[in-house]
Amino acid sequence: MSYVKSLHHIVFNAYLRQNVISYERAPELYSYIQGIIREHKCSLEAIGGVPNHIHMLVDVAPMVALSDLVRDIKRSASLWMRGSGAFPLFHGWAKEYYAASISNQHAARVKEYINNQIAHHKGVEYAQELARLAQVIDKTFDDRDMQ
Image (cartoon, rainbow, N blue to C red; front, side, top):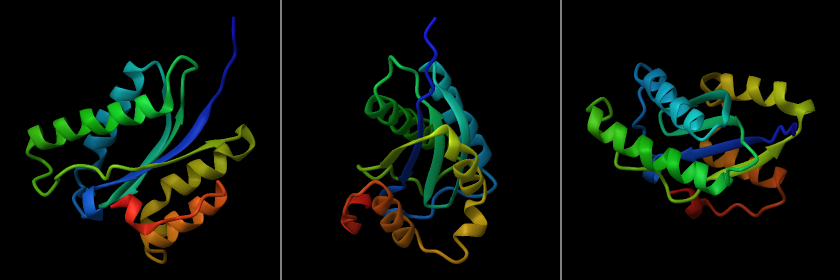
C-alpha cells in the first residue's frame, strides 16, 4: 500500500472580489465543497473565508491533478450557488487561484489561519494577504490576476 499525504493551501475569490458569500450561508457552501472534494477521493482538512474569498487545506489524492480539482470545485460550486438562490449576488469565481503545498509540520498553523479568517481580515485586506501568500511561493503578485 502506498502512503501519500499531499496537503495544499488553496485560495480563490469571487469574481471582482465581490462580497457574495454571507456568513449565514457560508457553512452550506463549505459543506457542498467538501462533497466535491470527497468525490475526487481527496480530504478537506480545513475551510474558511470571508464574503469575497475562500481558503481550504486539502489533502489531494495522488491520482488527482490539483488544477482539475480546483476547476471542478469552482465549476460545481458556481452551478450550485446560482441554482440554490441562496447567493443572489454571486456571478462566478475569479479565473485565477492561489495554491501552495504545505508540509505536515505546518499543517496545524495553516488550519488555524484558515479557521480564523474573519478575525484575520479585520486588520488585513485581501490584496495584502495575496501579496504575502505570493511571496511565500516566490511569485510576483499582480493584483489584476485575482479579479
